[in-house]
Image (cartoon, rainbow, N blue to C red; front, side):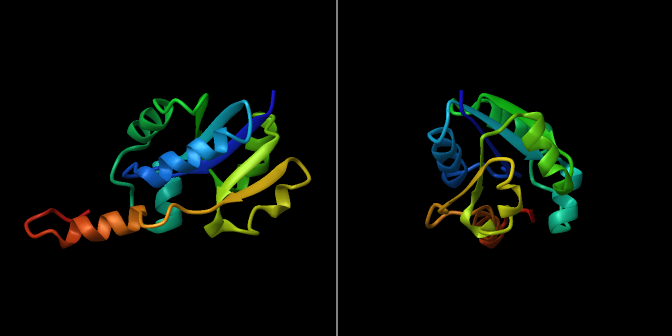
Length: 136
């Protein structure tokens, strides 16, 4: 069985998230997804996700392409997560191209193209621009 692992915040779940999970799963027989904890997300972006890690994990877990979900607590534990889940392939978005090549001694590293026209950042900007809407 070929195991694939990927990581993400998956806040404001959208088509781009769905497509990366679908394409990641197509690279193997079993897909494991590390969802960034609220603390990790805050440390990366200096703000909390809109949805809590529990909610984000439940959303990701409900996607038919996903076989297993776990909390990603630290960027420094990627090597440990890959080993722990016995991953054969690490999948990341192309915006991370080259940054995860250090794990190619453990598994194949694949970078997938982003879905054109959709991003969490763009969604947040759009929501903020709608008159009368609360800040995110």
